[in-house]
Structures are given as structure tokens and as C-alpha cells.
Amino acid sequence: MKYVSTRGQAPSLDFEQVLMAGLARDGGLYMPESWPVLSPDEIAGLAGKSYVEAAVTVIQPFVAGSIEPAELREIVTSAYSRFAHPAVAPLVQLDANLWLLELFHGPTLAFKDLAMQLLGLLMDRSLRRAGTRATIVAATSGDTGAAAVEAFKGREAIDLFVLFPDGRISAAQRRQMTTSGAPNVHPLSVTGTFDDCQNIVKALFNDHAFRDAYHLSAVNSINWARIMAQTVYYFTAAVALGAPHRKVSFSVPTGNFGDIFAGFVALRMGLPVERLIIATNSNDILTRTMATGRYEPRPVVATASPSMDIQLSSNFERLLFEAAGRDAARVRAMMSGFAETGSFALEPGERAGIGGVFAAARADEAETSATIAALDKASQYLADPHTAVGLTAAAKLNDNPSVPMIVLSTAHPAKFPDAIQAATGRLPAIPARLEAALAGREAFSTLAADPSAVRAFIAERSSVNAAAAS
Ligand SMILES: *Cc1c(COP(=O)(O)O)cnc(C)c1O
Image 1: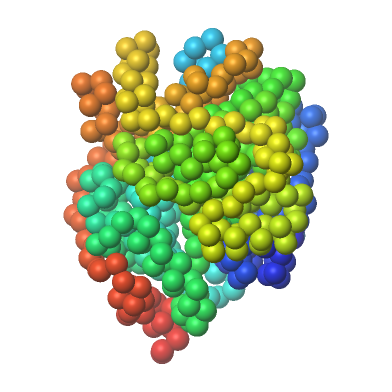
Image 2: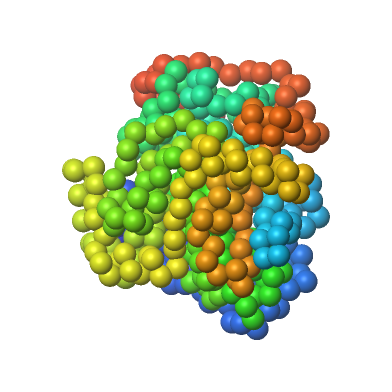
């Protein structure tokens, strides 16, 4: 499989190159050159298969030419061996036709583990084969950093630097990043906001000399391999509820648009999907874009669902590329207009194309809290605040009750105990794998929100540098 940039001015790459590159050099995002399609028989054949077998079937076409099926099966088996539920991503029925897809059974209790555990193994394999090392730099509002630490700690060929905003993530999230004790993990508390962290990372990647010298690599959801891994659970969930013989809908708590784009990939691969609901918290840029056709960020506000406190949904560019009929020049025009004026408008045809399967709804803080309380009362089920945003959006938009609605449950409630207690008056039980992180000794550095300070910090500690100097 070959991959092309959404902006059309970077070389096309194979899977392994895309895995290590993250962002394309023209500023675009990599996409498969064409969509592999599973026939209805192949989709029906996923029924009753293990998560690992389904993953091999869905992922194989995307890595064709880079990884043989037998090796892929080994890697996938290992990636999902650390999940606390035998189904990896189980469905829980809440109502006649309403389901939760629990994606929090991995080591850090958020859905990021489903992609990151695989990504860690894939990157490690590539680096060992090439005999090189990489420096991974990630900005995080909490869950991505924790998942990356679990996926990369102790890996010989990789140094991991995670930048998180000082005092703006939950204590549980911070401890998951700071208690690993692994010498290749470097947590960095940045005295600024998440946007400051992200801007520092972007500045480091745009410094091409630094990027090349330290073999910088990205693991946030601009990395295609993460989207690919997330496509699998759309298939397993839909097939469990009758696909391909009947359609299902998904409601997806959305921030950077990576997770829901994976649902769109499943649709392109032949999965019959009725609706993909973009569920946003008060940071509702995507809900406004769907309503007005204009993409226009506003300042970020802090909510009880912090992993969705984002106004720049990077992966939306992938959908724009599809909506524009894969016209890279059109994507470039939208993105340069955005860089100049701070907004862009969709063409009527693009808007109609997106509206054909996507819908969007926003849940404010009071609605989210009320949803958590109502579900606890009705079913004694504690949903985390991100999941509650998805449930609220599904309730607002579900006009066809004959189609199963699957709400993605993206985090375990124990990661956000304050919001749960405020809504229900009780605290979620803490799983053992979180308790270990909460009890460990913390180690991290604190730096000013200044790219040159972070650059110097990485230069001092990266073993890529040590190898080059010796
Ligand atoms: C990252 C995250 C999201 C948002 O996912 P995107 O792929 O960025 O849209 C939602 N919920 C939780 C708990 C997350 O960690």
C-alpha cells in the first residue's frame, strides 16, 4: 500500500515510512492511495472471530508490502495481550437499541491504548530492522501521553518526551506519565496550556535540521497507523450487532477527529454505517462547522472532558481531502486560507457530502453531568464525562430508533473521579492497573513554555544524540 499527502506536495511513501514520518513534509496528513474494500462475505466472516483475528483482517491491506500476515498476527496478538477484558473492546447494552463500546480496558484506561499499544510494537520493529533510534515528542492533554508512556517505556531504540500543561491535567493522568521509572521516558511539565505544548512540538518538527538530527517521530493521531488501528473496533462492534446485514450508527466523543475518522475509514472499506455522530463538548467547532459550513476556531474553554478541549481538529483535514474528491490543490487552498484568515468555508458539494453520513451535536457541562447522573440512576452504570458527551449527542440526534446506536466509551470513569462524584455523589472503583500508577514515585522536569528550552532539554537527554556523538 502506498500513501499520499492530503496536500499533494510530499513524496508518496510506503507503510513503514508513513509510520515513522507522522506528519508529511508539506504539512499535510498521509492517506492510503486507495481504499481497500472488504466484501459483505468477508465482513460477515468476522462474526465470532477474536479481536486479534478481526484486527489482522482489517489491518492487513494497509500494511501490505511492509508486513507479512504471519508477523502481523504476532504483533497484534502481543499488542492486545495487555487488555483486562478478553473481548478487548466489549459491547454493553444500555437500552433496547443503545450500546456502549467499552474502549478503556487497556493499561491506561482510555481508548488511546488500542492504537498506541500497536504503534509501540510497530515502531520498535521498524527501528530494530533499520538499526536506528528515534526520539518521540508528544504534546498531551493527558490520555495520549499516558498511553505513549505505557507503549514505549523500556523500548531500547526509542526516547519518549511527553509535554503536558502544568496543573491542567488530573492527578491520575499526571501520575500515569510520571511514575514509570523507565530511563527512556522523559515527562515534561510545561508552565503553559496544552496549546503551548502543541505549539512547541510543532516548532520542533518545523525545525528540519533538529527534526533530522534527532530522528523526531510523532505518535499523536496525525500518525496514520493510529487511525488504522482504531478502524478495527468499528468492524467488531457492527458485526456483533448484525453487520453487514443491517446498518448501525456510532456516536463518537470527538476532539482531534482521529477516532471518528477511523469510523469513516470503516465505511469506506465497505461497512454499512447509517450515521457517524460527532459529539463535542462546549469546544464545539465541529458542531458549528456542520451547522454553518464555516470552520472557525474560538478560544478553548476547560470542561470536565479535558481530552476533548481542542479547537483545532487536525484530522478534519483528512475528511476535507475526501469531501473534495481527493483534490489536494483544494485542500491546500482551504489550509492556506485558514492560516491567513483564521477560517475557511466548505463548498456546498463538500458540505452535502459530509452531511450525508456525519451529524454533530454538542453537550454542555450541565447536560453532560445530567447524563452521568441519569445513567447511574437507571442502570447503576458510571460513564466517564467523555462517554457522557457521546451519550448526550446520541440522544439528541437519534431519530431512527430501529438502527442500533453504538456510543464509544473512550475512558474509564476512575480517570475522572471529581466529575463522577459531582454528578452522582459517589466515587468509581479504582482498577488495580491505575492503583499501581497512583502509588508509584513521581519523577518529571518542569520547563517554561519556550521551544528553545525544550530543544536544549531533548538535545541533552536523547540517546540519538549520544549515539551520534560517540
Ligand atoms: C483523545 C480522547 C478523545 C478524543 O478523540 P479524538 O481522536 O481526538 O477525536 C475522547 N475521549 C477521550 C477519553 C480521549 O482520551
